[in-house]
Image (cartoon, rainbow, N blue to C red):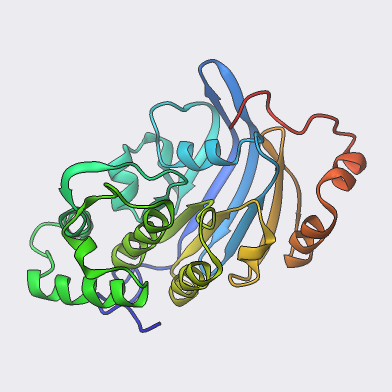
Length: 273
């Protein structure tokens, strides 16, 4: 995949340091994330795996400031700045990006206008990208992701299939060039060809100026995006960390061996999370 021509790195900034300390998150008075600790540095790819209902998607949404998720304890910082004090749009302007498990449809807003507006918000007043340059880059990236050019003018995600929505999230990622990328089950609903295209896009962005947090159920994705660290989440916290070999063992043997080692009978947080 060719390099994004909108500029190198995240507008000349140094590699990110994203730190999560003793994070607790609740939904409707039910604690879901229960004391999670994690540090991500520029150039690193971290994968979080775990059974359903263990808090993975709750973690992703809470980090981006979804209003349904209440932070009841802990700290999150990006380069020393308090992320939890930032609004959602402030987090995005600082370089945080979430590719959602279930992207929303936005009638009335074209895909191209959405991405260009978001990109210009990051670039700042007076630094907006010229329209023609933006559309050339957008069409080039759509071609590399095997997205029909007509999707640029369609309303955001409206009528898109599950796989098209996921590739559209990756299109936003490569256009916006974030510093902290959170991918929430981006592989679900993708056939092997689409999975390879998505993985190629992620790998093309790998640099000391970007860090990735990839949430997935399956080791299959990690065959194409090789993580530096693999973490297992149960009961709303990280219970085991390792390298790619940990993901391979989980794929081969499931989670029962780990639950047995840790003395965990019910790995969930009591609700779908």
